[in-house]
Amino acid sequence: MVTYECLMPRCHAEVYRRHDVCEDCWEDRRGQLTALPDLYVMTYAMLTPGSRIVDINQIHVAAVDPGVPINLVALDTLTWAVDRLRGWANWALSRQGREGLPLGYTMGKRFLMAVRTLQAYDHRFATTDFAGDYVLDVWTVYRRLVVQCLSTEPRSLMVPCPVCDVPTVLTRHADEYAQCLTCGTEWPHSQLPMLRRQTQKVVQQ
Ligand SMILES: [Zn+2]
Ligand SMILES: [Zn+2]
Image (tube, rainbow, N blue to C red; front, side):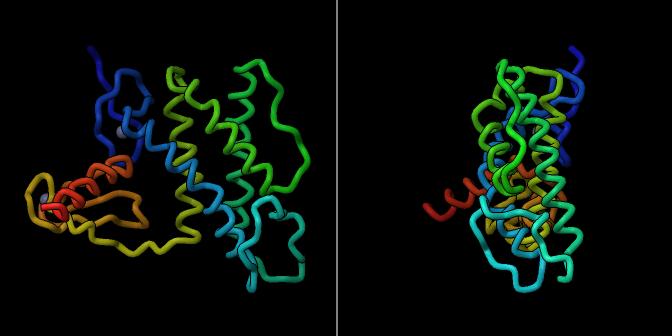
């Protein structure tokens, strides 16, 4: 049987369809979707000097005062995130025979509605030819928000490497992936829960 490599960055798991993702990377999207609304709010707070954390439903980028200096990367990230996820959410709704998300509302509310829709219905994408593209899009939205508002310092996982047993495993670039500095083995984001479980084992011993 012909196999392919999982579409996600740094994941080398085998998959059986071209342009697909492995089971772990498919499951990993859930945590990303859960984190998205808070990341959206935090990124909005980076948009202009003096911005504060506000309720996501009140976020409306079109309402930013044009006289204020603006973080264009954050702006682009916020608008692009809405566009990408609304597209997928509307597709999920159309597969249910339902109408797309209503226009109007603030940008933050539109984003939240898209995320909630995907949380409810995206399992239906799992068996389609677009599952890989979808997971990659969620990941890209998630990563763009993460690098806007979280520290990208490497962090030690304090765990013996599953390959060489030396405790030099780091997560890099705000958990984009993990790497062992001794043997060079890398793990995709979807394997971080597996690595962290090893930490708990060490603590319990
Ligand atoms: Zn994978
Ligand atoms: Zn190692």
